[in-house]
Picture (cartoon, rainbow, N blue to C red):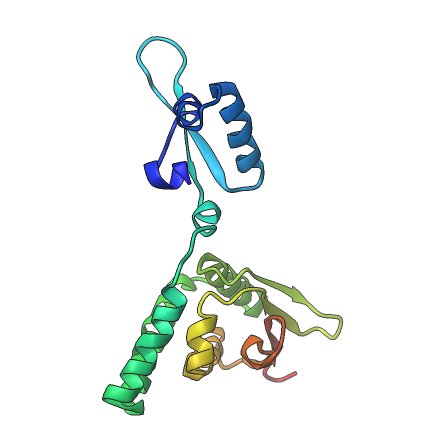
Length: 200
């Protein structure tokens, strides 16, 4: 909580605020770092050793309440009720077009389906989908997304899921077929996609 409120602190400053020693605070900070919740950086402090400054990681920040999912759903429902379903579809189409263009630009120079799937996986992981891919025993490729950062929005409006599947098909090219095998929104524990060579 103190790191959240102050942004960054030294172990000594944290110890002062907790009413304990700097070493005891440092041990707690190291424990948080081992859990991926805090990270330290060194800053010059004049003569002597640099000062170690501690701050929360993204995982640490995620331990605090975040109502963005509920707000997203509320905004989508407001668009639907005030402006109509067509307006919501136009918003989804705009996002689809922008994402497709971004992915295509990132895949320039990729040759072959394996390389494009690998690039797509990296893009999706960078967006928080915890994506991975592998070749299956039957020679197909399996793209797996273990997390959905837009799950609340996708549950409220499955147009987002439809758009993502369209994007995958477009950026992987006409020589590939892409089918969703598991769907988080429909009760799966993840989303996964089977990718085949089109002539296979």
